[in-house]
Image (cartoon, rainbow over all chains, first blue to last red; front, side, top):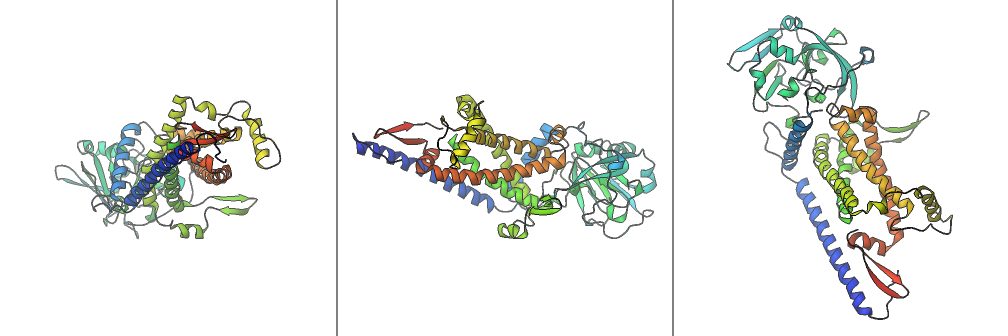
Length: 259
Length: 218
């Protein structure tokens, strides 16, 4: 539209010009500020390598804060992952990686090492674990990459394991750490998630003993976490009030990775 | 209202970009009809041009920060329109569907006259309300994928984890299509209209007398 005027051409023109100049000035300035803010964030230094590593410092802070928000507000032991009939479980279970569990292992020789708080170490054999009450779980396994698959696992719940081996004091701490025998893969789990009724130390898949590539002889199945936390071939377990080392948290992923 | 609109622009941009970094890790969606794949999300050249591959953890870190800004900004917009009563100019009424059709015919040069309109025409009412519902849809499908065990009821509402991820993806494609039409419309509407979206005032030519029309912060 053309701006015509008869009475006071200059005043109105000037008024329009002034407001235009001001508005677009502010608009532009905010745009530049937003862009610089983005530049700053994008080029923010990486966090100092520790329990977590590989993420931009401010983004790691945000991940940790967001974890607290969702842990406090939404995590509830009674929220169970949906379960399915056994017939829906995948026959060919997807296999992503062998980090920490390459090759085979002799179940008869294998022992699970549990570090107690008093410095004592338990060495638990496979048969001792199999003797505990068995829980079968058919649920939708979710990978951080975005795929999911209905899978059938069997084993003893972690809560039952704690009770049976007298680890109640240990279970009052904030975290549990699990590691493969070769220490090549390790995860840290917050205690509420570890004690969730569906968290299982699994020794069966589709009713059969675990194959080497699926974590023989004992692995973690934890439906309230992404697959990256479901450690294969557990070698040792320890308890701590500080976050235990976690393989993928050192590669820029969220430590919590809870679902 | 103008503020939230312009704040949303870069946030949504970052959300879509970081979303792509995440989607790449499991890029299974295609448009396939009778066994023939018409579109594959996304072709390799697309990823390469935008440097998408191998950045999943980075994408998640950005996505889970900017989701807060996206949701809060959307909430501000909705509260603002509710409190000021501006929603009345935006929300479709019972004539909107019929009038929107007439607007469409008019815009496509099929019909000579456009139906009378208030601040927004019927097509705009529908489009601008739909985009807000889509925003809410992105937040809720996002929550369903993000914490599927804790928000199991949301997952159920979305028709399962798989479907929730597909909705989430389709809404994003929807934003991109909306954006393209939106930009064309803004260009066609001209400078005066664009200025009003930035500065909040419009110059109206009334019987050769220019009137400065205060529109406040609409």
